[in-house]
Amino acid sequence: MGDTPQTARLEIADQQEDLPFVGSTAGNSGVAVTSLLKDTGYVTVDPGFMNTASCSSDITFIDGDKGILRYRGYPIEQLAEHSSYLEVAYLLIHGHLPTAAEFDAFSSRISRHMLLQEDFRGLLAQMPRSAHPMAVLGAAIQTMTAFYPESIDPMNPAAVELAAGLLLAKMPTIISAIYRRASGYAMLYPKKGEGYIENFARMTFARPGEDPDLPPALIKAIDTLLILHADHEQNCSTSTVRIVGSAHANLYASIAAGVAALSGPLHGGANEAVLNMLAEIRDSGRDVKTFMKRVKNKEPGVRLMGFGHRVYKNYDPRAAIVKAHAHELLDALGVKDELLDIAMEVEGIALADDYFISRKLYPNVDFYTGIIYRAMGFPSSMFTPMFAFGRLPGWIAQWREMMADPQTKIARPRQIYVGPTARDYVPIEDR
Ligand code: CMC
Image 1 (cartoon, rainbow, N blue to C red):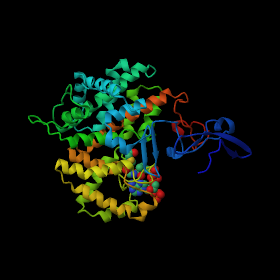
Image 2 (cartoon, helix red, strand yellow):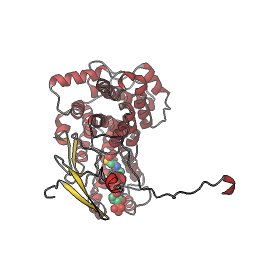
Image 3 (cartoon, protein in one colour):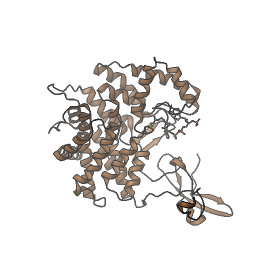
Image 4 (cartoon, helix red, strand yellow):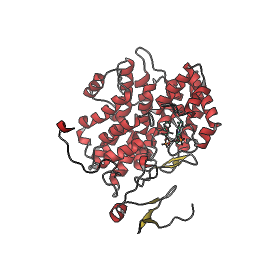
């Protein structure tokens, strides 16, 4: 790319505007356009923010061409192999890997808060069993504003610290409660002294009258999937969290908005959509080729779900890790899943097909995660809540960074107006 200039010169009609350059430590640098409207009367236009950096951030780095993902500088592959979800949460939120003492204090504080008050549980119990778990999850997180008013002041660092801890602590309990209610089982309580992921897995999978069977491979797989989802810089839900927070809405409200954004099938909802797509292919007599033709013909509503990414124009490094673990985990759990075979067949065809090659469409994180969650026993409607569980520390870290950044202003894009120009009101009888 050559040396980065200190300013970029823009010529509009007969005006020249020098735009300051914004440096980076890795990846693309930027050109600041904040003063453009004031100086020239023009705004920049960038639907979907394809070319717009909304902030500077030192949390997560992605190189989409090379397939690199790092949290606070640490490669995702190393974190997935050696770290734990709670340690990654600490890393994302506080910016450094914790010492043993810091980690003990952090994790024991979270363990202490995992219990949900009875009234909160009662509220979850009032939700229709048939409700989509993402609808209940969003409502539950928003409801935390009502239950923990001492933690809602976004300008009070101690309150924010408390809210972050309460969110991390209650999330597994809320998700397992949502799952159990939808499955017709009673909600369980967290156990003192049990590990964070172990507690979650037991509260989720224990069956009445049976000792829960929680093989270490299951615990490790949950932990790894949560790490892989923990942050992904300025994606749709994270940007939503930042935008809502920029109005000084509290952390719970901001994260509830992130949950809403994540529920969309083009974002976190894709893992559920992948499974539905693979099941549709299976039910059509496993006619993968016809399905691929429909994708390439761009039939309305037909996309290869779990493929493509705004940033990755190479194999999503998270998908590579999930794929590598999928067979191993299915073997450990004694599960044989035809959908995994179909997924691999679909991937094989896509990676050799010019439609996908020319558009640089590769499997993203959602392509294989659903198969793993299904092998664990989750219904597909629970896949996106598990994504939200994973993404929580990223949302918290990004919200805190946004609040601490002196450059933050309330997010308020401009528009290009293309509607009618001024006209006079017409009384109803004259229309
Ligand atoms: N299947 C078929 N064609 C695709 C796909 C796909 N999954 N994704 C992109 N394309 C085509 C698209 O039709 C377009 O073709 P053309 O140039 O002929 O018009 C080209 O590739 C560029 O696509 P785009 O929609 O402009 O790309 P985008 O950056 O706006 O969208 C995306 C990114 C992730 C929304 C999109 O790739 C997609 O819809 N993928 C399927 C949904 C999915 O798996 N989402 C999960 C994303 S990863 C996890 C997360 O962020 O939550």
